[in-house]
Each structure stands twice: as C-alpha cells, then as structure tokens.
Amino acid sequence: MNDSTAPPEPLPATAGAQPWPSAGRAWYCVTLLGMTVLTLFGSVQVVGLLTQAIKRDLALSDTQVSLVVGLASALINALLSLPISRLVDRFSRRTIMGIGLLVVGVGSIFTAISKGFAQIFAARLFGGAGGAGNGPAAYSLLADYFPPAKLPRAIAFMNFGFTSGNGLALLLGGALIGVLAKLGSVTLPVFGELHGWQLVFLILAVPDLVLGVLLLTTMHEPVRRGRTMESAGRAAPVGTVFRYLWTHRAAFGPMFGGLALNSLALGTLPWVAPFFERTHGWSPAQYGIIFGFVYLLIAPLGLTFGGLLAERWAKQGRDDANLRVVAVAALLHMPFAILYPLMPTPYLALALLSLNTVLILIGAGPQNAALQVIVPNEMRGQVTALFLTIFTLIGFGVGPTVVALITDYVFNDESKLRYSIALMNGVLAPGAAILFWSGLRAYGRAFAETRTWHT
Image 1 (tube, one colour):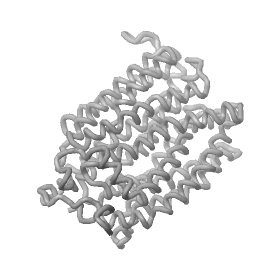
Image 2 (cartoon, one colour):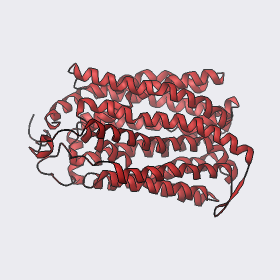
Image 3 (cartoon, rainbow, N blue to C red):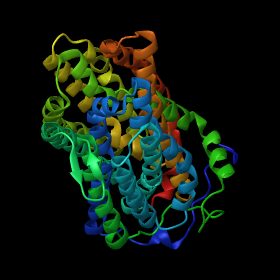
Image 4 (cartoon, rainbow, N blue to C red):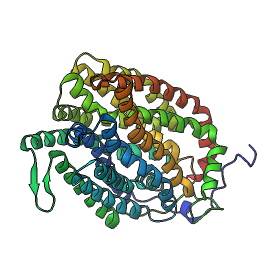
C-alpha cells in the first residue's frame, strides 16, 4: 500500500511504554460511565412515557410534541458535538463530561417549569447542549483504559447502563407516572403549580447533578495512547480528520451508513408507549412497568453475548470481528422489528419487541469498539462525535419527527401509528444490514493496518 493510504506512524512515545491503568480504576470508570449512560438514555424512555401528557397539557400536535421530546435536544447536541469533541481530543475528558452533566440537570429543571411550546423547546435545547461531549469523551476514555482485545467487553458493560437505564426508566417511570396521575397537579415552593410530567422532570435532574459532581471529583484521567508523531500533544485539525476518513472510506462508509439507517429506525422508540396506548389500550404506566422488567432481564443478555462473541472472534484471528458481530445483529433483529407493531394482541407485540431489543443490542458494544480501534487518539473524540452526532440527531431528532409526519400526513390518523412504525423498520432495517455486511473486508484491512498502535 502506498504512503497516501497508509495510517500515520505511531508515536514511539512514553504512553505506549506505560502499563495500562489498574483493573480497579478501569472498572470504576466503566461503572461511573455506565451510570451516566443510564441517566442520559433512561431519561429518553421516561420522556417517551410522558409524550401523551405533554401533548395534552400543552395542546400540541404529534409533530410538535416530536420536536419537544426528540429534535430539540438532539439538534443542539449535534451542532455542539463536533466542536466540543476537539476539546475532548486535547483537554481533560472527565471535566468535559462532568460540566456537561451539570448542564443536563439544570436543563431538566428548566423543562419542569416550562409553560408553553416555546419555553419547553428552549429548555430541551439547553439540556441537549450538556450531553454533547459525553459520548466522545466516554469512548475516548475507555480506549485509553483497556487494550483493544478487552475493549468490546468494557463497552458492553458500560452499555449495561443503556439497558438498565431503559429498563429502570420504564419500570420506575411507569410506576411514578401512575402515582402522579392520581395526585393531579401539585403546588411546590418556588416552582408553583406543576403537572405530573413536570414533577418527573424535576426528579430527573437529581442523578445528573450528582453524577456531574462525582465525575469532576473522583474519576482518574488516563494517559492517552495511540497518538501520532505529527499530532502528538494536540487535537488533529478538522481537515486531517476528514482526510483520514476519506482515505479509509471503504471501512468507514458502511459503518456510518448502516448507523444512519439504524438510527432513523430508532426514531420509533419514543413512539412505542403511545403505540401500546393507541393500539392496545395500555396506559404509559402499564406499558412501562411490564416492559421495564423485560428490559432489565433480557437486554443485558444481548450486550454480554455481543461483547464475548467479538472477543472470541478476535482471538481466532478475525480482523473484522467487531463489525461482523454488528452485521449479524442487524440481520437477526430485522423480522422482529418489522412485525411487532402489527401483532393483534399486546402480549404478542411485547414478545416480538423484546426479541428485537435483545438481538439488536448484540451489536452495540462491538459497533462502538469497531470505531475506536481504527482511529488515532488525537482524532478519536472528533470521529466519535461525528458517529454519535449521526446517532443522536437522526435517532432522537429526525427519526421521531419522521414517524410523526408519516402518521399525521400519510395515514392521517393517530390510531394508525403502528403502520408508521412497521413501515420505518421495513424500509430501514434491511438497508442497514446490507451496508454492514458490505464493509467487512475493508474494515478488516483497516484494523490490520492499525494493530501496532495498541501497545
């Protein structure tokens, strides 16, 4: 391979000569980051349970409420993610994450006291800004805590926060919403009269604020590894980042393309609770409690299996191990994603939704690990930010609005939400699977080229 396509030479520097962080520090980091993921993504599920209440109390359409629960925070997160990621590649990652979580907590408080569409949209924008640096900083930290062979498992364990957050949010959020529905409005000092969903946002602020303080005061910042000679000590320029991605487009293109399609399909997530309510008559509390238990029990199985499978295939010498697991997961979950909203009973729908969830999560840890191990350290935050911007903006911003637009303007009937969900998954899931499979060979070559970095 000629010099124009070869990756930069690794820095023969002190970082690589130093031992990896102790197991205690490394797994404390995983635990704390997992708790952070739990609060950030758990709040997404809770907001999904509140969709109907927000729509009713603020007199919004499906399209308007989709902007509040999805696009507002996702949009500002996407706009700020790339510039903040340059700070991630240069400055303390724990500081960036800690301050961000404090902003997220304050944003939840602002949301709780909002009285109309403009106020709640602005509050969600503010809160979304706080989460902009979380993903790039978290994955960059883990890649400096764990060697490549152990990274998929570490990311999978961190993503237990994702599954636990979703499960606990549905379970506890559903129970809390049921209790608050019986209480009606509540008057609090300073805040005044609040609806039940506004009280929920006040409660959501607490763990974000606490974790922000813990990150700032207790997490160790590890030595950075895998820096290159021409960029050592500073973040890579944006032009260098995009040239690197373009040079290795055969590996990155299918990864980003498959992610984009899967993320758009993920936009159905905030509509699952309304789907069960409109189609099967389940209240948000009923759906949340039942599916919360399911999520807590089965979702970790997918994460664990995916991490172990990637590790096993890597030990067998498969350079494409990480992306191959992602491709397998994309193929296996497809029929269940399409069929669950079409089931005639809520329990059949719940069964297929559960299978869809556990199968797609097989690829969660390996997908993030796949990206980290083929990107130099000084551009890792920026590339991760681009990756997560696609995930956040499309999955939690554009996706929910597309579902709403299909329901409002194609089917023109909110009771046909189930068909909007099935249509989205039916078009997008096969495309994502095809893209992931098409990139296996190029990804394997890219990993082989960068193996010498990870010392």
